[in-house]
Amino acid sequence: MNNVISLGIGKENKPFSWSYSKIKNFDSCPKKHQAVDLLKLFKEEESDVLRWGNEVHDGLAKRVRDGTPLPFTMKHLEPVAAQVLSVPGRRLVEQQLAINKDFQPCAWFARDAWFRIIADVIVLNPPVAFAVDYKTGKILHDSQQLALLAACVFLHHPDINAVRTEFWWIREDEITKENFRRKDMTSIWRGIWPKYLELKNASETGNYPAKQSGLCKDYCPVVTCSYNGKYIPPNGDNNDRNNSGRFSQA
Image (cartoon, rainbow, N blue to C red; front, side, top):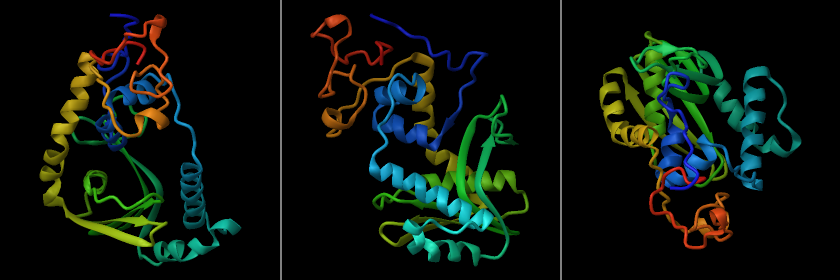
């Protein structure tokens, strides 16, 4: 096997940790997740859509947290900010929530941080809370991220017994929502556990196989993958394939 690289994940100097985005990216393509998110051998190009999404998140965060007026190009989003500001309670903007493997809250950069998630806005009004995640892409029906967010809110705030979570689809002007209660926590973690185990097993074995899709040829930055339209074979070997999915230069 050529060019084997050790990630060191799970070793003492880098404990295993995960997030919803890691689960999502791994599920999309393990090989790309390894090359882009872990080894950082390649970087996704910032498309106009992604750039706009980042600007929207930044603009709304400053508007809701600091009262900074929205940029001229986002004035049409003032009703979004106004709706957040109308919810009674203590507002937390771009709140970073981390827990350790014992399901105890911890600091974001704590050495024992095991799972991390960021909420665009959380409004605390015990015994209930309201959590929003802004979305600038197309509508996708996946409540797992909201469930994990609610679970972390419960762990960080013992006085909260119910969380109303919502995706606000900015481009589509739609809202999708899920309500969670503290008693739901066991089922929330049980629901994500199979995917968590897949991710953890990959980190322990180094097995990140390529997963072919319609995006491989033109949109994936991992040119060392033979499914990529700009494939660059290692050592000039045109017969190299993605058979093992192990650390062959990602």
